[in-house]
Length: 588
Image: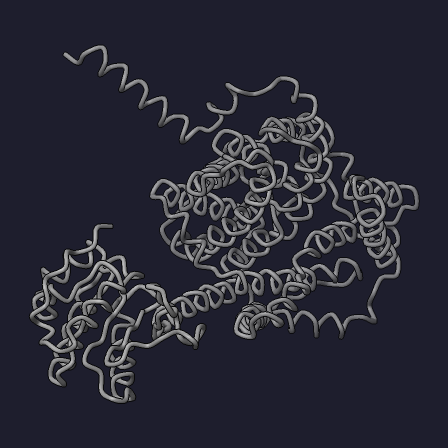
């Protein structure tokens, strides 16, 4: 029988696990009721933006506006339960909407709108399951492999693709397909068919949106422009002038419906779902880390992946489309003073109320206004200043960003994403395989050492080359280390008696690198040159011993510090290096 103490420990462990996976159990216990009014007002503010923006994103994803009202409540409530960022708002985003359409569009070509909607919901569900499993497996670090220049270029290109895809709504002409340049050419060729009334509505909507954001930043710009354009369309009967409107939006509560899932559709949707998870998570982290840093609290990246996963599962089961962390709505929520996820819960309740009672208000909402809202929403993705900064600080970073941007424009969203991911991994592998090998010199009168390239006045030790690999030694760069050491030895005059290698940056050693170190030791010994090792960490030393390399090098030539190795060399220049007393392996 388990003791009372063991039962108590089990209960405590269960409580800890529940709080880890359901953060609401932690923050709800310490919630200050005095913040309730502020959170409700923040939720109301977010609702004023979320409704028109989400309807626009629904059309961007190729689904009816009702899908936005279906997806939002479940996603918001799921994030409130599972998320760790107080200000974060989960919902539709321009990037995810256009990626969803790019994935589903080719698969649903020639089928009914109902089939298209089912595939869209299935895609959200699949992306949610993938994100949830990745979060449980603690794979949140994967998003870090998308370097900032590559992600900036990709998002910039995505914004351009979104914007050009909405211009036909502002002009009142038929939309086209193809990549960015195909759509731009088609738009230019159709300018003569522009509907002046539609153009006036679209341009006016853009003017109001940017004007309010510039001069009245706290005003609910999206709600204002929706109200004004809807009233104008009703009063002036704009539909008779060829201005397209949203039309009827079914009212009612969101309902659960499992998408018709098949092996074939899952296989076809899988690449798009992986892309949605990667980009959605990277976007989300960018949004929540900003608030966490500003308000001095920690987020849990893997738990955020779980929260996004559950949010997308809910959105898919409620016949919605893929959702993610919205930077614009998160910023608005923060500026409105939100102190907890109560604001998100408030927004979810207001969305349900909208779906039940307020959908008729959107009947005469012009499509041109929705296009203007989307363009205004993606305007912040055009980070021209960031591209200039890349150009000024690093031409390599600028070229990476530009390549990702152009790949998006030429090859469309999913191939552009794959190109961006490939660039990130290629950059990672290039840098890992081409590390700097620093030749070290001693500060005059001291026992510390630094790179001679940066400190040319440092002293060198006659007969001794002191080198440090400024990266983890592994199979991709061990040959480079061997070749550069050969070159250093060849260029040294007079020929060195020993080479001291600082391995501080190497945490573990693979078989390939261990064998390469053995080859280096053999080559140097054939030239009557000893290989000395310094700052060898315990796991590395254990591998050197198992592989027989420590015996080849001589454990007497393994030192705690670089200076220990230098002092041993200086004190024994007149004797055989192999006669030196054995140094103990470093304790790390």
